[in-house]
Amino acid sequence: MDQKLDWANLSFGYIPTDYNVRCRYRDGKWGEIEVSSSDTINMHMAATALHYGQEIFEGLKAFRGADGKVRIFRIEDNANRIISSANGIKMAPVPVDLFKKMVIKAVELNARFIPPYGSGASLYIRPIELGMSAQIGVHPSSEYLFMVMVTPVGPYFKEGFKPTNICIMREFDRVAPKGTGRWKVGGNYAASLEAGERAHELGYSAVLYLDPREKKYIDECGPANFFAIKQGRYITPASESILPSVTNRSLMQLARDMGITVEERHIPLEELAEIDEAGACGTAAVASPVAEIHDIDTGVKYIVAKDHQPGPITTRLYEKLRAVQLGEEPDTHGWNTIVEGI
Image (cartoon, rainbow, N blue to C red; front, side):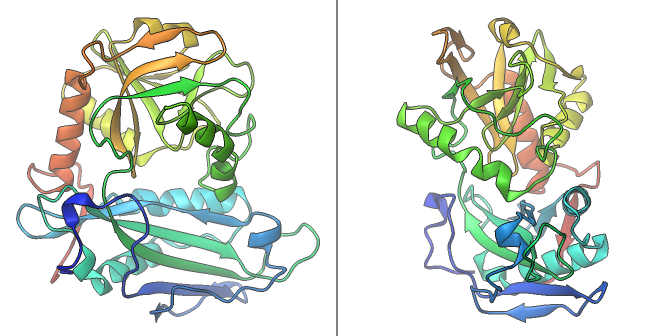
């Protein structure tokens, strides 16, 4: 364990670690796994990742549990999602077994950077695949690089598990209808940067996007999925332009386990006036409660956390998910992969 880091006060940013793990796709097949201590890569200036956006990635976490064991949360779900992303933009899919093997190896090699139990921090795992062929002309690459890097992180929102204000700005779309929104490609995040920075300048933690077709329904919340509690039910948007969040799927399952009705459906903007709780959820954010939602264009303010405290159901779901990730409660759904010997 790296004793020099202030585990309890880590930001969500990049801290160098010892190793990353790499594998290359050439001649129609994946090669051998390589271990590297370099934090740079060599890439041709005409690589398809640079010119045509053939770049996909994932995000998952490893935790040091109450029993001292290291758990990686829902590794197979992330493996399957990056396959979906690869198929979506014509990249070579990374086989599930290769993905899992490389993620586990990256965690093992950087074990001293796994934050201790009770610190509130975790080891963030970033698998990334890049199109590497030199290509002038819009065609898929024939060569790919898949890498897994890790870094210890604190909470994504600096406020932690405390309600924040978010805003709606109709002048921005995160993605196009039936576009790349359902896949985890870097371009989706590039498209959100201007809106996100504008929101931060105005004092908001994130932008709540409306659907890109009609601007009538709730879509994603910045880099995360959106969910709300209404009359004791868990509701979350259904849309072809939303990335299927592993965390959101987990919260939905935990809600069902608690006897809470789950609705994945269109949520009209006006329905925000009727909700009792709301949050943004994702691997990085986990579950970030929402206090108020301000519609910048109309001036309407939707007050969600009336006492500026996280709602009771959001709190229960957050605490339950964290307890499963940290080994404090039984992993009844088999979500955790325990990494032995570290």
